[in-house]
Length: 164
Image (cartoon, rainbow, N blue to C red):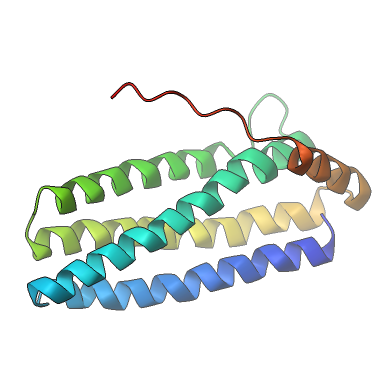
């Protein structure tokens, strides 16, 4: 991955980290907020986490397959832990949505949101410490970029039909 591409990933993670710090402040406000303010804070949190899920989806579809191919990890996916954390994020977000939909108290929602944000904080730190290092040291620029461009040019896989 070129240094320019690594820098773009770093900037995206820096933006997510700044936004995460803002969400932490808002979650701290949630338990004591008026019902109207709590609704605003909850909806803002859900919108932001959806943005994180979109970022995770891109990593799963484009970045991780290329990293796994070029990391030299053999039959074991180098990104397995990061992928697992994406699954946890999705599950915990679903739980947060359920709590909000069912009208749970602001303190219960704040506790779950704080847990989710902690997971995301740790995940961003792991990606920064591990994934970027691999991108800088293991991959060759032109081969990795060719693989990344090939993945970017493919249409996303079809969505699974809902069973609901």
